[in-house]
Length: 234
Image 1: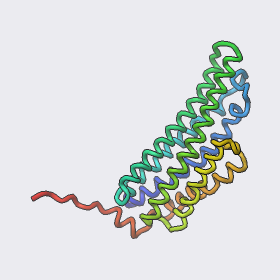
Image 2: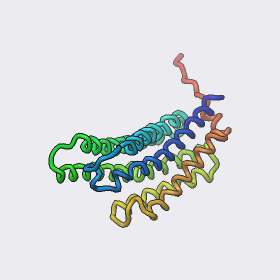
Image 3: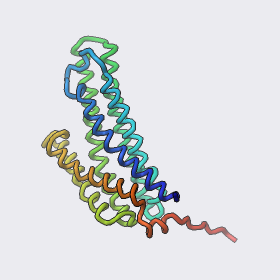
Image 4: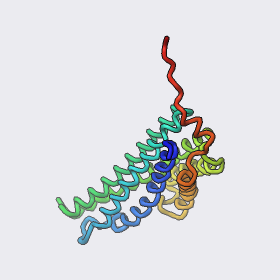
């Protein structure tokens, strides 16, 4: 297997891992996110801990998609490729902040300090931090990153044209949806928010499946895979 083929496979796996565990983690978080008095209750925190572990995998995979693609993209779009890496690292960092905020609620639950009202206020603040990182990470930053990557894939002809075109549509759409949530028009976890997220999910899965099955398109890949020799002064 050539190095560019391995890069395509690893990138495809990262895109898959970044998508599916995120949905499972959101479901596992519901006992905490859906109960304002969770910090005062009893019982197992295993579901929230499992969700946190899955989101760690998501954060690593989000960063991994950019890091593995960078050597391929930089040969034609060096500046934009670096920007994509930075954007995905920011997205991953926001996800990690959200994880830490929910794990902090578990600490308050196991080692309570202060009155019940104080615990409730602290826990709700930490959940609010998670909710905002969930908006600015997997929505605002994702919209910008998706648009940027789709543009580079289209210009570099690394995949069939319809795949990056889908990304160029879904990126601005998820960004616009995040803006609507920020303006208070609807909740992020809602029918409207889900509908806006479906195209970006379709873009990532289409790109992932294509990279796993076919790799980068052969013509552009040959051009990208060849390192140009550095001229040596006489």
